[in-house]
Image 1 (cartoon, protein in one colour):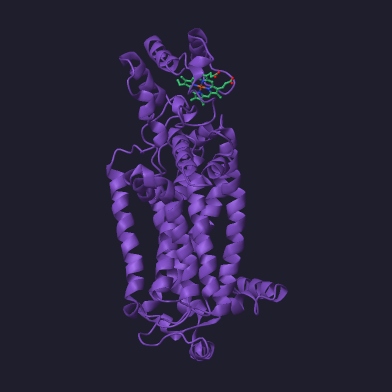
Image 2: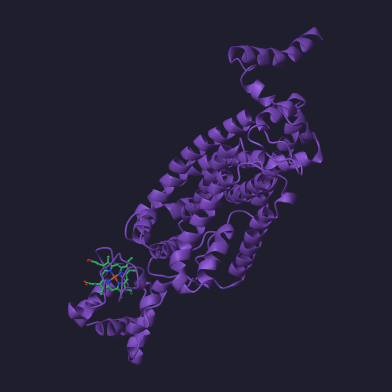
Length: 473
Ligand code: HEC
């Protein structure tokens, strides 16, 4: 018996050994037990859990991401195969990929709920402006992770999504070409693009995210968790700090009195992610990427779908402005929020404009997402259609050739009259420098960065294409 009692004491002894060696009492434990407003014990406390839940899923993303990186090969010839191996052969590979996929969606959703709560509770106001600003940068990091992660799938859809994204980015005024070059890491989507996305996804953004989370949590502890807003009681910069001291004077320790809710919701969210991953799994991989085949469905993952639907629905002339302008506007707004409204009324019932500022974009984006889900996804790309100056008045055979020019993705690499990609030479006046025989040879044989099309064009199609290009004198 006494032996058992002796063993029972061991965990306590280990804890006190660790506590003394690492001075946990006035570091970690002090932070865990820091006082928070007493109101958090009430049901309103359930609104305060989404930051912790986001952090919990982030930890899951780091763990599963490291797991995936152990096997994934970020090279254009191997990426697709290594993902096939992860999805079908590696032990638990499919589940880990699924967790990473649903975790990414959960991060986007949780960050947005967390920011909405902070915004509607007026918790971004004095003295917590910097919490909000670091949080806005974290939102940017989460979205950038979601975007770069999708290309790493390196299947047809991923490949062509980036081609579409780059073509769209290139339309932006002034910085378009530069931006497209930055995203694609060259003139065309290829190995360099994959390497750039991989390095950005596993080194650059995570490093920035760790730093930002550090700042964000430091500020949360230092500035204290905001008390639930009371209608009619606003923030006055001269008196707020003193009033908050009083609130904390009657406060409760964060752990365990308030934090059990964070722990409970975090656990629920992680369980949901794991269950979805086990039941549904990560999206099936499409075919291996092939620049000679334009697939019709370069859909982004669901949380970006609304934005791509918007770009497809608006008149093409406005696309160049909207593509950069809208996200830019949204983020400028986020950054200006605590600078324009640092004090005054916090309660949402006294801030109808704030409610509209949340509800209207939400409804708009939800409708766009539904539109994006329903429409057979064909983005309205200028590059996907040759300008009428090229197609007008063509003989039937040449017209068929012009159609093949886009259908066979020649436009992705070649420009004609200013429309199309820039990897290959401009073909506006190709017939002036090449004979018909040279044209056929170049298309069928490829080489020097040009794919060989002999295998994927029927002789009649090759003839149509050549006839069309031969009109370009
Ligand atoms: C993946 C990008 C890519 C695709 C897709 C592509 N090309 Fe090319 N193409 C190139 C590159 C790069 C060159 C230049 C090769 C060189 O200089 O050796 C080229 C060269 C050519 C040339 C020779 C131009 C000249 O002035 O010498 C012709 C003609 C041509 N391509 C036609 C086509 C046609 C027709 C298609 C569609 C069936 C097509 N290309 C698809 C990248 C591409």
